Amino acid sequence: MFTSQNENPYASPLTDNVLPDKPELASLQASPCPRCGSNDEKPVPYSPLMGRHGPRAVDHVRCSACGTQYNGETGREITSRLWRHLLPVLLAGILGLLYIALGFLLSLP
Image (tube, rainbow, N blue to C red; front, side, top):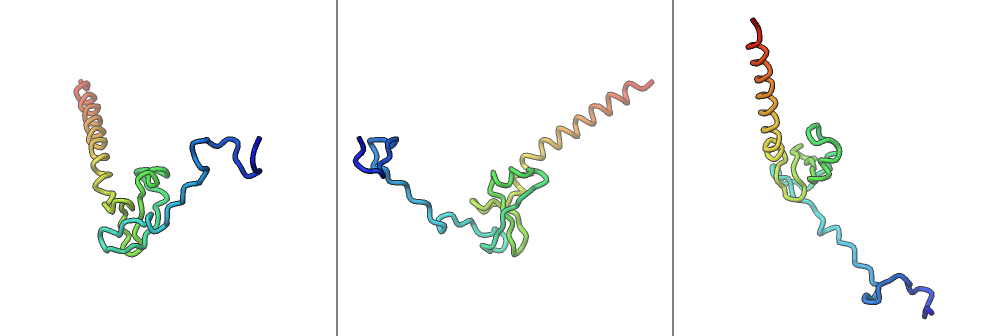
C-alpha cells in the first residue's frame, strides 16, 4: 500500500509534502522610534485604555531609549490614534451627564 514508512497517508496527492520555510527574523524587524530613531524597543504588556489584548493587536511597543510608545509595524505614534477613538466617547459621556443634570435641575420646584 505505501512505498515507504516516511510517506504521509493523509497528504494531498497534488503537493510534494514540502513544508514552507519559516520567515527570517531580519524580515520581521520593527520600525525605528519616530522620536529618537532607536531600534531598541520592548512590547507594551498592558495599556489602561486598551487592556491586555489591545497592545498586542496593534503591535504597541515602547522605545527603551526615550520612552515613546508607538506602533511597531508602521512607526506611527499611538496617542493620535487613541484620541481619535476616545474623544467621541468622552464627548458623548459629558453630554449625557449634562442632559441628566439639566433634567434634574428643571424638575426642581
